[in-house]
Image (tube, rainbow, N blue to C red; front, top):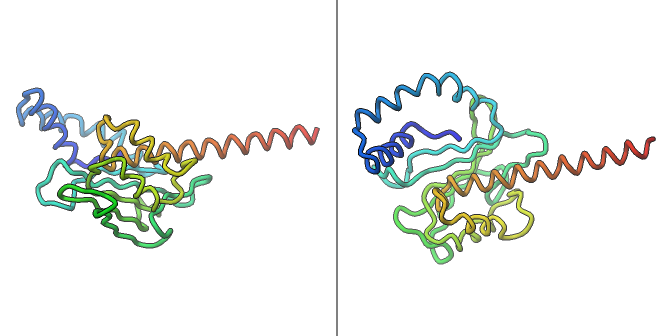
Length: 206
């Protein structure tokens, strides 16, 4: 997870100031006190991540601190990992699906997909800016994604509906964490199958 400073600050303001009554000055001091450890031990790990979920401020509406733009950065060339893509693998896509099949409140939803670079690594970037009004309609978006790691049509939507009350379930944070979980499961199943095959081959050789 790679959460931008702007989003971290907005979240901390909402939690510590609005819900716990802390002052703005104490919140800022708390953030600054943790930065050295973050910069020393957490930030350097980004370079080695095969899959990174970036959480950024929205680009759909000015001064909107609650709507999120979330990007799933998938490192290219990773063994047993086929990046999720939207519509056409390798293309640059911008898609605003709001309409008859996907209802959206202001400021709407926008998806993007394309090639990018992250810490010198080539990545496939899948982006969602905005939030879902009705998670039942997510199946429409799911139908345009490929390499999701799901085992049947609608499994992604079904899993999101199970977590409908969890924080971030209506935006890209929950959406991409669920996708990441499916991809991890997919890699596990591939490696398990390969290990079984190797074991059979070794038994046969004996």
